[in-house]
Image (cartoon, rainbow over all chains, first blue to last red; front, side, top):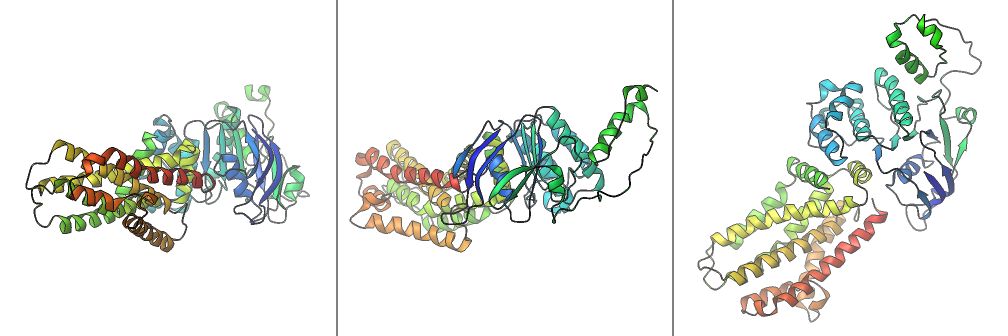
Length: 255
Length: 220
């Protein structure tokens, strides 16, 4: 997907939110959008998802199937969680069995029969994530996906993102909480001053509004973990998702 | 598109907001058909019904479109693209067709005489035009186009009044000629002019729908 010379503002004579932005995304890229509040992160996400049209410039080669999880899932809808997700599966032409699979993966199987307005903020947020993941999206746009999630789902989401990317999908995430820091191959785009440009991870980590979770000078240690061979890869992926360095050779696994 | 249409209709009916225009319709039907319709007045009654029901259709269309939260509309756009606006209009039209069917059934029950087939067809045609006009007015006053609920309600009422006043004035070609429908139907002249009148009456709603589509390009 390629963004060429993109400019956008909400109304005539309103100040430009983004001006002359050029970006390129390759298949399998996982990109984090960073910037201060009001810098235009959500606007950029909506432009990339095809919800807003650029006033100038183009966005080309957008994948056909787009999944979009908004920052605040609209839970005031008259459906149960299962009813809503089944409707969305039909709308997105996804296999209806995906509903149960994603509900289980996101730890909300026991809430499928609950009405959406009765859900907690975190559970409603999971419904927003689940509908975006239906139908194998080629472009997955997640606006603050970690907000309100429990620890298990916070650890699971990087794995899901990695699977979408491995399939060749493009994942673009706005993540104020820095939960994706340490994600292998993560790209970062900083939005601010009406521009959006790719920055090195160190620059993004130095942002005042998004401090790094671990101070650079903090001492590190090596922790050995004994785990069943069948679960080794899963645990390694989970730890990598949390930002740890994991070394696991095939020989060690065989032992 | 069918799945999204079903989703929106289900959301509207389950939210119970669909009862608001339905209750409005029932009140109108009670007033219009409190006494039986005399023989020979069938086509006139159908034209009156079509013209009077336009604000109910507009109310229902606006209610259905505004029933969906903005973020859910965004999700729908990512799922089906720009056809989302077409689906919204289609769902509103289908709901209004249900309201029109109820009205037409009550009207038929209150007829004293047996209407001609041509009159029934013209009556159905006028209701189809009224549904399209009402749906267009509702869409043009829905939240993506008019953000304030108060301004939206005012625009809907003033829009219908403007259509009535313009069709009463010497420039009825500037709008859907509702008064001409009723006048010609009551004087037995409607069937002779129906094709031309129908085409003219559909022109403005279609222009309105095109305007809605254009505005929605920059107002997701």
